[in-house]
Amino acid sequence: MAGRKTKRRNIVRFHRGIQLNIGIIVFLFVAFYFAYSIYSYVTAVHISRYEVEQGTIEVNTSYTGLILRSETVVNAGQSGNLDYFLRDNTKAAHGTLICSVDENGNVSQRLNEAVNTDAALTKENLGDIQSLIREYAKGYKDNDYYSTYNFKTDLSGRLMEALNLGALNTISDYTEFAKDNRTFHLYRAEEPGIVSYYTDGFENVTIDVVTEEMFDQAAYKKISMKTKGTIESGQPLYKLVTDEDWQIIVPIDHAMKNALTDGEVVQIRFKEDRTTAWADYVIERKDGHDYLILSLHTAMIRYAYERFIDINIMLDQQTGLKIPNSSITTKTFEIIPDAYFTQGNGSSNETGLLVEHKQEDGTYTDAEFIPVTIYYKDEEKKVSYISQDNIQRGDQIVMTGSTERFEVKETARLRGVYNINKGYAVFKQIDELFSNNNYTIVRAGTQYGIMLYDHIALEGDAVTEGQMAVSR
Image (cartoon, rainbow, N blue to C red; front, side):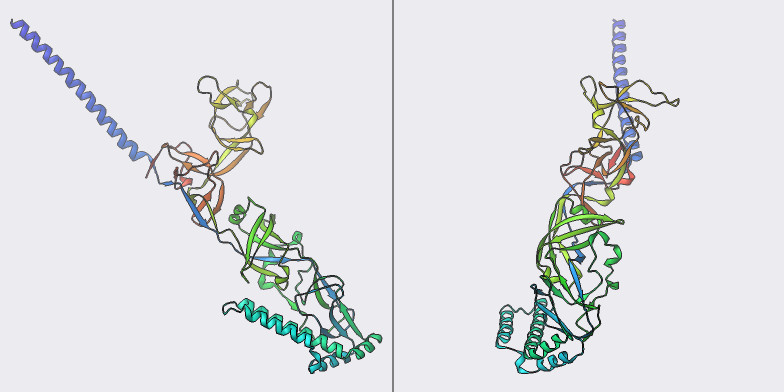
């Protein structure tokens, strides 16, 4: 009986010992787990994260452009007194009287005397001027300075034109005599165009010869022809703009170049009078600078007196995925033709490459299938960008079912961000649309890019591919 009790006590002690040992093991396991977790958290790289959001950046669209036109400068064939009969920035038909040169000054003197008489203005001239004044008065606005300035210029020009033409008619007998004696010369438009009375040295400039120095307005000089009462043979009389097509050349920054890459037509607004126009455009790079070439087919006469013009490019805003500039970094990739990619065997069916590694003696190992991640695919060139530690420059890629080999040697850098959704860093290529000093708008929905609400590293240059990360 006593033996049975002793045996029973031993069994109980044994079970209690087992329970105690299991409890200690569980306790030690939990303690180790917590210690490891604390150690991992303390020693892990803490990466500040940014959640990708839909956003908009206001675009600074204010630029100053250089105007190029088809311009012909007409020079005087004689020296003498100069008188104009057509106002500035006026359309002239073929044969329209523009100016005269009087070699001995007699006709010019009589013209000036006739201008001061009542006979110089006809009823028709007065009617035209009164009509101009009435039209301006109907649309007058206190805050429209540009319209008022234009009215003043137009009125002065019309009055000058009417007075000079009227005076020329009143002394027609005398002018005919002077013309017969070849001392008085009338200059008429040899082709239709817009008459302008200034030169600036840009009359023969074309897009091909535009340089950065041409945009220095501090060095720009405009010479008016109408300030002279006399002229020497060979000097400019007037300028004729012979084509309604014209161009505005605008130096642009990288951000505007990116914003304009998807189109061929853009709307612009002229700051001077707040009018808008549509322009065809191309972007050309010359001597390290990008130039936006705007081609217009209307409204040229309104700015015929201008060489530089302030415009707004009508891109009010850019919308897409908004990310901080600090997240953007670059990464180097190997470039592999798409024809060399293959699928692995087995259930995983991974995309990869058959690689023959180059050895120190110049020979190659047997082909080995290596799974790879494609970071970007150039559909036009039919190549893909990969980054794999065990594929080095000099290795050969075997084309499946062929004896063709491709040597890994070409690399390129892509701009992108590091996605940390899964707790480790994965590079994602971005398609940048626009940026300012703090943020960049990137295209949404790209195959190898980021998505709305992704978590990315706030400081892209501080992260490497595959790095374990603890977000904060």
